Amino acid sequence: MARWGRKLRSVREEMGMTLRDVHKASLRLAARHRNGRLVLSPGRLSMIETKNEVPSIFRLYALSIIYRRDIKQLLSFYGLDK
Image 1 (cartoon, one colour):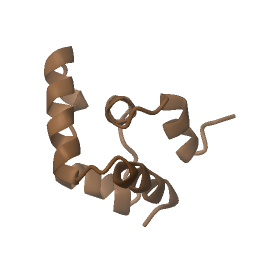
Image 2 (cartoon, helix red, strand yellow):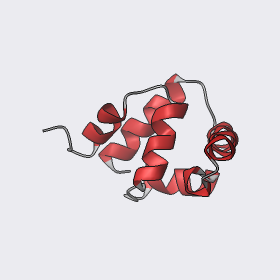
Image 3 (cartoon, helix red, strand yellow):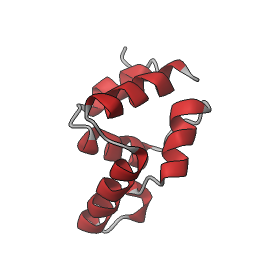
């Protein structure tokens, strides 16, 4: 599992959320913003957490909203904090 994926999974687990919970929250967020690029399927999130897949900026934004984290914190997981 990629280091950044472990960090994202840890945040999700701290929130007490399942992959499906995140998916449902992303559907609501996408509907509110009228932007389907904010949707995270359970499979896609699993790939991000376990297979070195880097999320798009839209999905990273969605995760920051869903996880109630500053997007800068999530960017730092990928070494983009300098």
